[in-house]
Length: 212
DNA sequence: CGGAAGATCCACT
DNA sequence: GTGGATCTTCCGA
Image 1: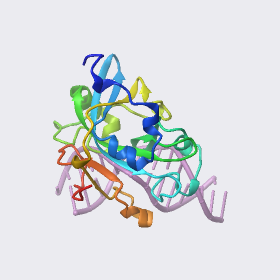
Image 2 (image 1 turned 45 degrees about the horizontal axis):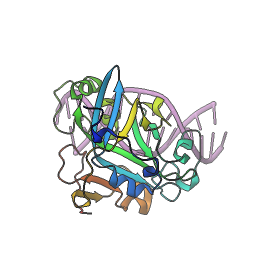
Image 3 (image 1 turned 135 degrees about the horizontal axis):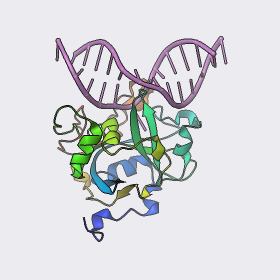
Image 4 (image 1 turned 180 degrees about the horizontal axis):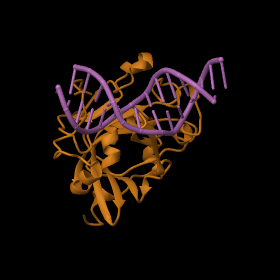
């Protein structure tokens, strides 16, 4: 990967200062780059979910809940929000919007561009991975890139974890539907805030059908 | 201070 | 398709 490859240029600061819904759709095709032990692991983002903050019941910041954990969500857009779920798995989000708003984009799935062997080792898989096994799910994605809560609040414009321009996807190739695992969220559970690259094999289940 | 719930994943049936 | 693993966070008492 050449240093002049435009796909590895970081995004403008202002990129993240937009509504989560907008950033979630635009992050598809972008690269998530992890530098670790002298290696560079690269995932192409293929699935995201937007969380809208105080007005979104599925958001950790629902109702303006501001705690030690969620404090990161209220930062200015452009940093990581990493939390632990089910006592086991880490989930990586990109914080969006101006400081004081709690928008975020959950990175749900990625496709290996570089360093797939390292990712497989991080995943500690018994069987050889099929499509979607490497980073097809928010917990898997974090495990593949060795992302943990230590990266919470990390600025994504600098190593060892950054988002770069990647290969942007046209809106015609974006599909959307309801978010996963938030049945408790009332009306918000039906909001079509999950985005994926149309026809991509590395997206996590269940499959999306709605076009957007 | 206790308890319940959770933006999940894996192995096995 | 099911159940088990595993623990932080938050709220109510």
